[in-house]
Length: 590
Image (cartoon, rainbow, N blue to C red; front, side):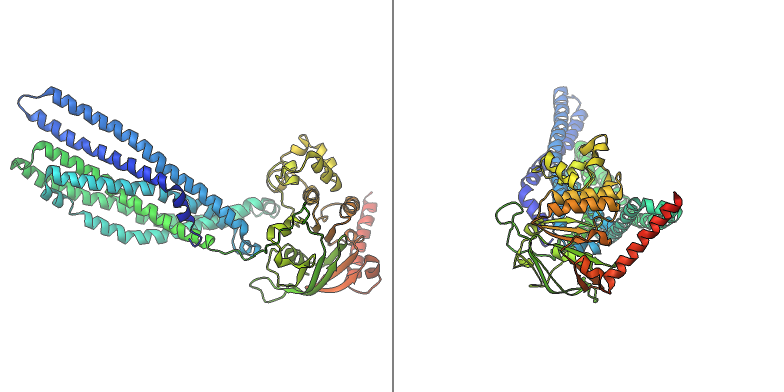
């Protein structure tokens, strides 16, 4: 990975792998003594006068080797497997830290299900590589070297060479199948990401699915994806399951050679029966790690496929870069809130059509700007640029007379109280959502913010009041309640600049009027930008700009614009007519 995530981890935790390797090799050495002792016991039992003391001595040594193997195995598993868990935790933290730095445009290009697959499945596969995978390799190396050395030195070199003749064929099979396994596992991971995204969309959109009676259709569409996932897994299993049986076949040949030539050597008195038994023990010891080569290949090919996928994410450079100015929201260096936009035009990445064209706006400290326009006119785009969620051309937006690009992203955004359209709430208490898990705010601060946003009375009706858990994305609240909690979250910051993006659309006109009156008091001495579809939310603004297809087509106060022919009066008449009809309908119903 370009940012050296894995090397940085190894630099920090390499000592754990070193100690794990030391105890693993020690355990292998201790385990390799058992066949030798078993062979000695066999030879002792062949003697006419059995030395029982010697027999029991070696039986005791075998028991000690078992205890030693148990102890060392426990220790090396603690170091190696525990280190793999450290890696898993480390990667997830680094991934989240990296994702937080990436632009909104990145999230526009990637589905939530894909990112969840990276964070869960791919990191899990890497953990397998750096845990069980590393352990299997070290165990295989240690067992193989010690066993082969013992077979040559203690038993018979020629028998060793003949018995190990099938090993090159095993290695050849593993290499040939390894590439296929990696390719098929990448397809499995890709399908997993798709299926995760579909599940996430179904859960998030369950109300829409039910109201449009699409349950069966969604199940049918999911069934197709699920079958693709199943087939890709079957294709992977079909290849990976061949490795184990093939390796066992070749090891069967090794044992056959051992039995034929080994028995000949025993009869020729070139080796003892005990040596023959010991040799079989060593061959059995080698068999386990060699058979596990198939699993090693599986684990590492999967890990390599996941590593490549994670590379794609970690190598994405943050598109939005901030400057060095660090205005504090509460200190002497905080922003005043003067905003100047000059000749701003903007097109979203990958789009030729401009979302904003030649925008010019000037706001002094303490002024409130209203922004209105039909859907798709560029209102939210303007907000995105003020928050610098997308790159801004130098000199086009100035805050307090300084280019917006000179400010650090953190410093800029900490001085802005933003209420987005979607009013995202966290699965936590109302208290935590208003203060956004920031302990610097007191209970009094939280209550004051909730009163200003007109949500306080609703909160006090809940059984647990401010400690009420609101569920995922505020599922237990109405749209208006979610909007008002979002407004309280912005108010409690006491920022230099308030930005409300259609933040009052879900409340009734009476509540809207009360909130606007409260906000006028709060925003006194602060700059405010209120985006709305309802003109009633903008009447008190110092200036209103009307956007149409990315251009400012009108500007002025409410009183000035209502007298002019144009889009503003057109929108006003439409809303007034709709309100009049609603009143008539209510009268008829009563």
